[in-house]
Image 1 (tube, rainbow, N blue to C red):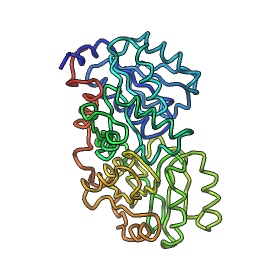
Image 2 (spheres, one colour):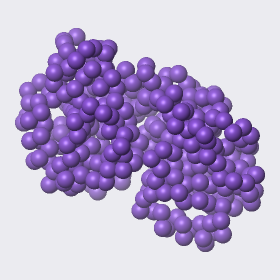
Image 3 (cartoon, helix red, strand yellow):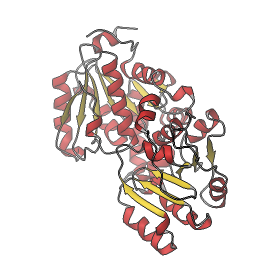
Length: 372
């Protein structure tokens, strides 16, 4: 292979994000930047605009430029100009509405720029949420095959990208989201747990329809009265879901804690993470819960969770929201120890191996650390 990796030591790896909002895709991208700096590569971050909830997680040594233009139409000229000025070896994007314009802009980017895109969700389940799904899907089929590399977080997603959007197999890389187990477990100590004797559950993520917490709230009435749910996250559906809990008379069993930059003590203290999502890609929070030794109960629609369940035998239970999920939750063991439990995360999802594989897919070669 060329020495694209050697070139990358002089020309930066550039990650482009809409913002540093507190989502899983943003955390994956920041993890990639951290892996790049550990490998001795120059790394830059470009964001279109705020919010920047995860600003404290930007790795030291990464040059960060915020364009101050949250709307893509307003930000695009400045984004192209910034990319032309910094002359990247690789540009990485993980949001569909950014992937498409970056691929379309290839002719005006510096010669030899490697364009790498990642899908954060299964398109078959998420595409209908964009304003013009038919057009968006056609553009994906036209432009995604032109990317130098398309990163899929699961085999299921890779198969879909190949079959539905004609991405050539040689340009597809399946890279599970890397999880830094040691750092995460240290941050999870000591565990936090809602007081009381009953089952303690946690749901985490942006409060949007995708995350499906409204499918979990009615189930609390079917569980023992001392069951408690802690919800970590903020979002537009929050007020409606609080009102739903009030109507169903379960509001006293729920604590809405808002966004948590460090959710891991809550994951470590729970009897289970519950993921009632309507669609997902490869949810980081599932990997993080398993790293904390916490089992997971997830809806079957939650993307690649089924692949995680196969690898983490017995630690992940798939159950449709309704009687099946109630039964799965009722069968959980209660946490008794005050310490973080042994990790349940399969080795294939752990850093540094998964991180090096991800970085190698992005830069297009060996990512062994080198002197700068």
